[in-house]
Length: 394
Ligand SMILES: *Cc1c(COP(=O)(O)O)cnc(C)c1O
Image (cartoon, rainbow, N blue to C red; front, side, top):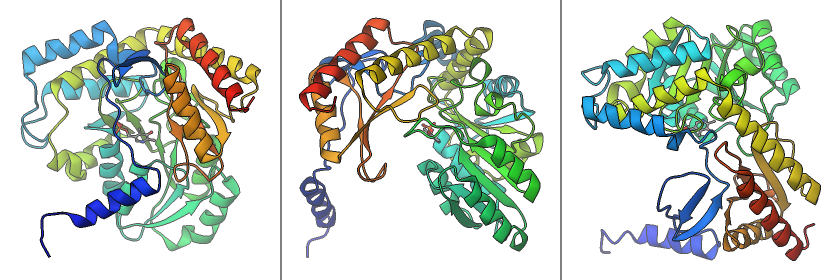
């Protein structure tokens, strides 16, 4: 047998094609904003996480350019050696002020942050209790640590309580992990009850607020602020890659968390620090958010406008409590057909099907942004109407 031909991968790729799930990555020839040039065609973009349009804000771009002039393109090392240039600490202090927490530790991405933090804060003899719909990066973080795990049914507080009752006494620390906002349906974690249960059973709480930061709470301070739970959630994860518009992740919480992570979080020890452009741009985004509710106001105004119009047409927009607007279609094939027809009509919205969501609940997930104009949203709704009628869904 000849080696290096990677026949095993060729076979797997053929299988993808047979299963109808093979795809090529779409190419965006320009900034990721309200309208994009996707594969050479201008479309209204209903699929980005750039919730507030900050990825393309002139002051944010300028901050990145200025940081490159002063600090260069790369950090040059991991943070524990000489990659800890002073802008990172300034960003962390700014984020701590924004999140109203004692201290913040930044990572290179939200995924890195979950992988590094979960592994560092639990050990053998501990138990993690995780919502079944938690993000993939949490699942990976749990896989990398030595603690035991238990999964509770999505947002089912009785199931969570049952696990706590059954297992609490067998473990040292118990850590309850949940997304703040669940990205496929846009629903919120039942944080007040989770915190109550954690306090009753002496468990720690960990909230990944990637889709809540910059969206919920005062000026986008997040889900914990939305529910007024400051000081009662131990580890609050945020990303700088979504509403903040750049790249990076962070943990907000106590000083001790930050100190411990600086000694034990592997992405900080073994992977190069955030580049200066990203650090400076993120800091500018956070400053803009702290100085004005203009961005979050526009986001919610757009989201409410779009949801109301789609609902009026008779589409099922699920039970989202955030600007994430799922349009539930049902069958996997019809969902993909709908997405394709919308793209032909000039609207890009990704179809999400099994196994990402349960069978028969295929949906188009519309991500509304502050950067959309009313014309963008009206155009998108019109195309939804035309395609929906053609497919006899409304
Ligand atoms: C997007 C997301 C992440 C990953 O964030 P990146 O900064 O893009 O790596 C982590 N957790 C949740 C819940 C997310 O939605």
